Each structure stands twice: as C-alpha cells, then as structure tokens.
Image 1 (spheres, one colour):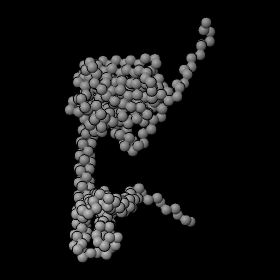
Image 2: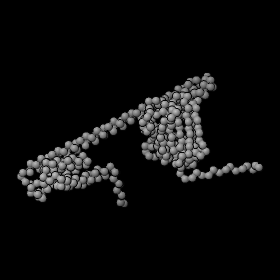
Image 3: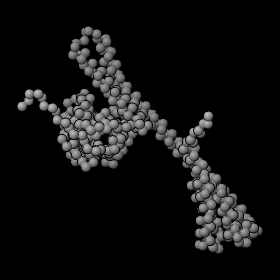
Image 4: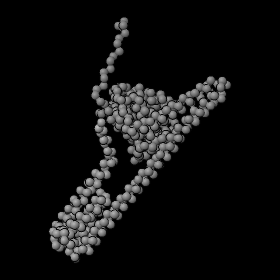
Length: 371
C-alpha cells in the first residue's frame, strides 16, 4: 500500500524559499548596479567599485551569506567585463589585477561581517525573547500561586474550625464558616475559569454559540455570583426594552460582565457605585460597566487589555480578566474599549453585533375561562 508523504512543515520550507529568493536577488542587484554605473558613473572607476560593494552589502543584510557571495563574484565579473580594458571581455588587464583582487576580497569580507552581524542580532533577539518568556512565566506562577493560595487558605481555615468545633459551635457561626467556604470556592472557580478561558484564547479554541436571548438574565446571574464581593456596594442596572435582547453566548458574556464588575471592585473604594447600562446602537447592543473610581491613566486605555497587565491600584487578580473580555467580545464579532468618564471613573463598553432578525416573542396562551 502506497503511503502518502506527510506535508513538510512551513518552517522547513521557509529557509529554502528565502535562499532561492536571495540567489535571484543577487544577479538582479548586480544588473541594477551595472546599469546605474554605465549611464551615470562612466569613467569613475573608484565610484563604480564602491557602488558594487554597496550592492553586496544590501544583499548580505537582506538575504544572508550565500547570496552575498554570489553577488561578490558577479560584481567582480561585471566590473571586469564592462568597465576595464579590453571592454566586453573577461580578459584581465595587468593594470587592473590588483583592483579586481582587492575588490573581491573586500566584497567577501563585507559578506562575512554582515552575516556575523545578522547572526549576533538573531541571537540577541532569541535571548531577549527567552528573557521575556522567563519573566512572563515567573509572573504567571507568582500571580497564580498567590491568587489560588489565598482562597485555599481561607477554605482550609474555615473547614478546620468547623471540624474542631464540632457541635459546640453556635449555629450562626457554623453558617458563617459554611458561607465563607462557599464564597471562596466560588472565587477559586472564577480564577480557574479565567485560566481555562485564557488557555482557550491562546489556542484559538474559543467559539461563541450565539442565540437571541435577554441581557437581563445574564446580568442578573453575574451579579448574583458576585453578591459577596459586592456586599452593600450600590449597583445601578438600566437595560431599556429596545436593548434588552441580542445574539450571544450566555456563559461567555456572563464571564465578561463578571470580569468587568470585578475589575471595578478592585479599582474603587468599597462605597463607590457601579453602573451597568445597555443601549441600542447601529450595529447591535452596547453594554457599559462604569464605576466612580480614579479612572484609567491617560494613554493606558489599550494597555490595560494586554495579558498580565496589572495597575498599581489593583487589589488581587492575575491581570487576565480584561484580556479574556477582549477575546470573548472578539469571538462575538464585537469590540471593547475603555474611556474615562467626565464625572470621574472608568467606563468599559463592548458591542454585541446583531445577526439577522430577532425571533418573535410569542404571547402566552390565555387561560381557560378568562373573559
């Protein structure tokens, strides 16, 4: 049975392709330099030699060592053929032997030095990338270990108190411990979910299963999950009828709302209010989560959506919440941005675009016996 050969990886094809392009570019460059020298520098042999050497430098910098060697040899041959006596002949005049030898040696040295510089630059870029990767890995491990260790410690403390207290604990205290365990477990669940969502984004595996549904339900579920962190913080929700329905993935948009509200909680004092509003726009529905805190530093409106970015005013968090928000909104075909409010605070807005017409809402059937 004949086996079909596996396709070669793109990385394996890139190097031969670049070499082929360079081997074509080398004679092209020599031809271009020859034309310029023939029509513009006729008689100035020193200038012509320098022009050929410049062409070798360009080829070496752009295409590497082998094409530059070809350009060197072709440059010497072209100079001898077109610009030394006897013209249009590869016969070497004794007066130009030393010139041709020096020209070839200089071209070869230029090729070698340029290739060395290219390798040093590539090595430096590689080291810098490995340094950035190492810093990123350390930051992730430090952040994850801290953000996971804190709720785990609280859960273990509450569970230990319950076990050691046995029946001697008052009922109200037992309920408080159980509530603490539940809240911290929910916090752990959100942290792990953010990590899984970040992994899906990195792998390009996040897909939005969009259905027409009401926004109020998603916002309500998100606020219920954040009941403990919100505590007595005032939250004002305004979703008018014309902006109450949109096509979206409920679980993903719920996570966006949770992340944005958590972000507002981290960056504002305990008594600062949060507003959640929706409005109809041309392309769909725009949802806004706004706070009355210090706002975003000027010029940082885009940077805050970068992975693992954490501001100096943040309390806790791994710095991936807003990155996940951007990925989720992009998966819906929408956009998300941040701007400071004139009255103070930050306003995060994202658009869920419409696709097609919303399904008609069927009226409830009348009960038997109704007038």
